[in-house]
Length: 209
Image 1 (cartoon, one colour):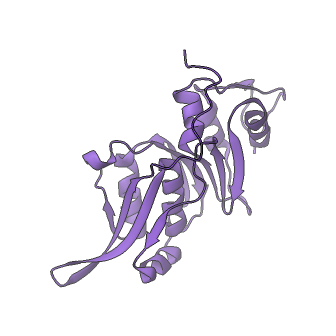
Image 2 (cartoon, rainbow, N blue to C red):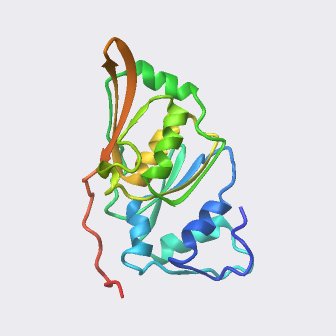
Image 3 (tube, rainbow, N blue to C red):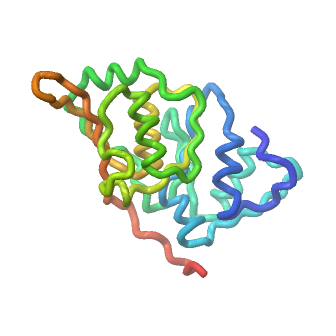
């Protein structure tokens, strides 16, 4: 997967969009996801920088450079490749109170090619609502979503359930799936909330400048 010509350095100005645009459909990895700890290395700590030595670097070259030269790690959790730091929880917290809804989500498509670069909840909520055919909480632009992390991931051919999981990884949120009743009409509600867990505190080897 070509990264692009004349790319000699990855940093906060170019890394996330370059890598997500370079990610192509393949038989093994369905999504490339930057978790919040990884994007913090670029945008908050401003210390993630990697040098590329190949004249025509690939996405694999970028992954190797990041994991060798920064505090960002990569782990494959099928079908996703997660880019994360030590602080990111790698297990999703999903509470399922409506199992038949989950089975329906797995039969529904997400979007053929998802590409989200630093997108907030006002962008993600309508996409999830359309794909899942369910009520999504919190609503877009609501105060409950103000502390959600911005979402950065690229994906191909996910089903709606996988799209939900990708959004939860990228936004560092927990998820609950439940049935609720409006008078006598049953509705499926999918609620996202901020995940306050951290595997480790950030490594302060260098303060942001």
